[in-house]
Image (cartoon, rainbow, N blue to C red):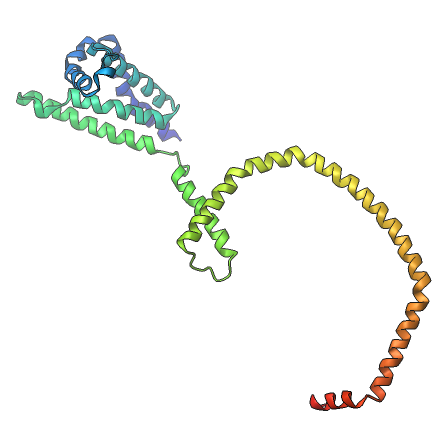
Length: 262
């Protein structure tokens, strides 16, 4: 979208400029960063702090390089959400170290730092918006909830009288939907691998079944031609017997018929 292509470089421009300036002149910000570096070294265990650099300029260079890399990535649209969150993470310590107006006794400097403090807060808000921007696509949480609700709807529609599914049923249906989504690629891969084999097997079995049907069909036709007269005679005898019973039913059958209103 055109708006994003314009807004992202605008948002990242200040971080790119600050990153270049910090790499070129780390000593200018080393004095401001020194109290924050000392607090960091004091807060970590001694076993770990001895591996950390002591020079504040080293931290200024790391901070500047991070801002420059993330700013360029955000401006070019590569990993925009990750870049935005990275810049937001670098903005917090820079604001606390550079714009702590509540510790400044000079009124003019305090006002200036307060202005920059709220400017950084505004930048942080813009970075948060850029960090959660999905460019019109549904987020992962929405897609997960939608898939779970679809699975619940499918399961409950197949159960009679389940107009108000219980929480346990919804949970099981969501688990079922997740399992189906996880196994679907494996099933598709298995079908692709075994599809040709199954088709060949069906073709072989089909010809065998056709041959068996043709053989059994001729045998069945021959049997019917041989036993047809016997079956017709048996059917004729049964018909005559039923007609005789209907013409002169026995006493028990007549009483049974009268009991049912005949």
